[in-house]
Image (cartoon, rainbow, N blue to C red; front, side, top):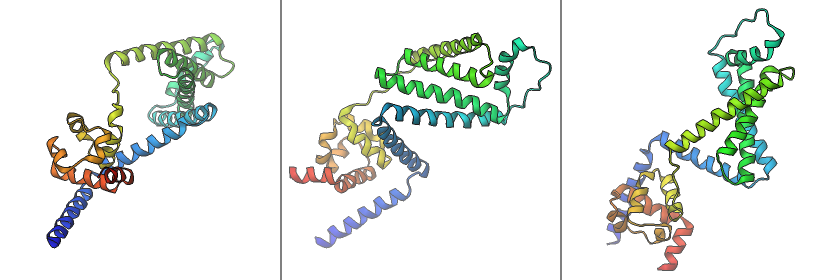
Length: 258
């Protein structure tokens, strides 16, 4: 009996090791990236508002600079001829869209950085992301775009018009997004199970957990037969049970219940 039990245990571990080695590398990278992103967002949300706003603005600016620089390499510099002084600001803003890599990197950094920073502040103050916050952030990014593309000598009316255009576009885009997409609401009773499945690369079986009402309080009680009853294949069942056995918190709860 002891020998048979040892052979069965070694066979199980070998199967699990093989499945882990065969896991899609891209999927492993996505899972790891998601974990890092979630941890960073959690840390950032605990910081004071000025710190969070500064970090978000900087990150948005870097992202925008990268996108703008990439677009700038694909569009040639617009040649300049005789320029009427009254049309200087408008022309500069037009050139900003077809400028070189540095020009577009600067402008997109201003747009995305300011937009992200204002949106962050509005969300922290208002406690939600809504149409008003999106419009205010877009208006601010429009002003920033006007300042960096036309300079301080640009006409104030051009800056206001540009900012209003940004705000209008963002408002329409926000409402369309609300109409055609329904944000998924995470069920708080399956948070721990969802995290476990995500780490194991088995997130597609979350619906099986919900179908069998295997909520977070049931995790320490899971058995092979319980997982089989919700149509989870043998391989994933082994990995789930092994994870629960290795998790100190879940293992402790299982031991105390036993």
